Length: 227
Image (cartoon, rainbow, N blue to C red; front, side, top):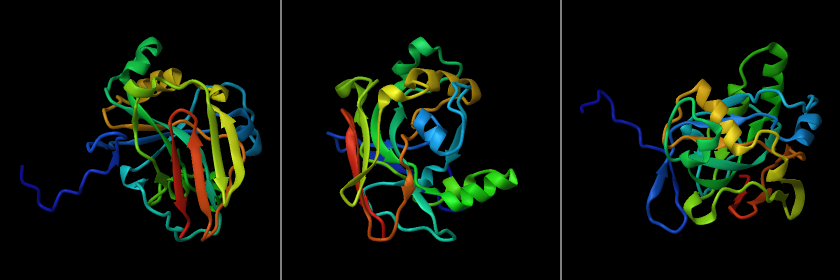
């Protein structure tokens, strides 16, 4: 096939234990999926249908430091479990949802909180606050065939050695099979899609020079510096 301009490269992530890589299609993020985080953001944590926002696949940051973005003075960390979809589908039954998962990773949903807050007040989309360049740092994908499907385990983020976020996958309001099944009624999922599953309480600002170290028990770790 001939293109009128050079085709962009496909963003991808390493797969632990292999030289092959996981091609990233779309990035879906679940909002307010931990009750304590919902409360700290000023919302009722009642179990309503989940809502999603998106980041472009070019937001992936793989193994590099996080460059503090422009047009903001308030960038926040949000530590999350990431689900990597290996088999697509629409209207996926909840009981079959995990069969569509290739693997899992530790990731960060970096947020320009000031721009997000301004957008909320104006009733506008969150794109400038959530979907900017490098806003989705992600560690290597670990195949589910190796670790199974985690349903509990600590989700922790340290900033400069101090624990800032700590939760457990068991506290997810919407569990992994539920969010896959629901999301597949809104979009036909594709192999290569990622789902950021929500963040525990304790989100807060980062500054240049900060060192972030995050982990999801039984899955993996992520570390980077704010530059």
